[in-house]
Amino acid sequence: MSEEMDMPCPCPNCGNIVEMDDMCNHPEDFKTMVCDSCYDKLEEEMNSGQTQDHFGNVLSYRFISDESTIYFSVNGESFSEWNIEDCDPDMSFNYFVESWNKTQAITLRSIKLKTTEIAEFVIQSETGGESYSCEDVELVQSELSHVETHLSNLATTIEPEQESQLSETLQNRLDEYLKS
Ligand SMILES: [Zn+2]
Image 1 (cartoon, rainbow, N blue to C red):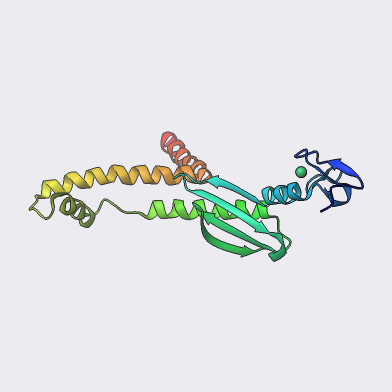
Image 2 (image 1 turned 90 degrees about the vertical axis):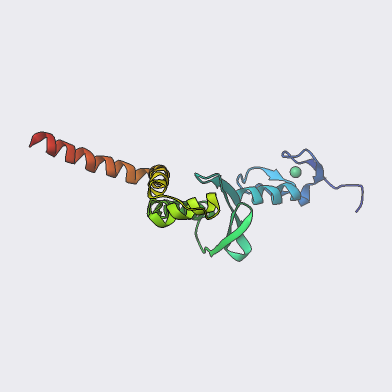
């Protein structure tokens, strides 16, 4: 590459001096010109993002515009990909996160821990197969019920809309009860 430039120009983003002809329009602001490498970096930033779910899992996306495909990852492992024609990647990601949280909430609600089978499993793995009494099982079952309550509370936190619906129903019932 020749050292001499026809029209040297500083990139407003990184400050590097580049040839004017090699500048590109800023991907978000058409009034600004940036250098080649800044353009690539900015476009990648625009077409990617991440968030965390309630368990600290990192959900992220990367949109490849040439393929019209959005790639989702969970904790850095690729998870799923959607073909999105004429659809905003940000909105698609929001929808993905929403579905993810909903599925998580449904799963949490459907977990049943307070069963005899699970209590016995816990005791057996703790004691290594020693004999145990009915009281032992009951004790573990009551511990498990706390975990179950904790998980269902967590599910409600994940779906706040459901929470307000639930409290509304409870409030209505309480009002009816107080009136009667
Ligand atoms: Zn630059």
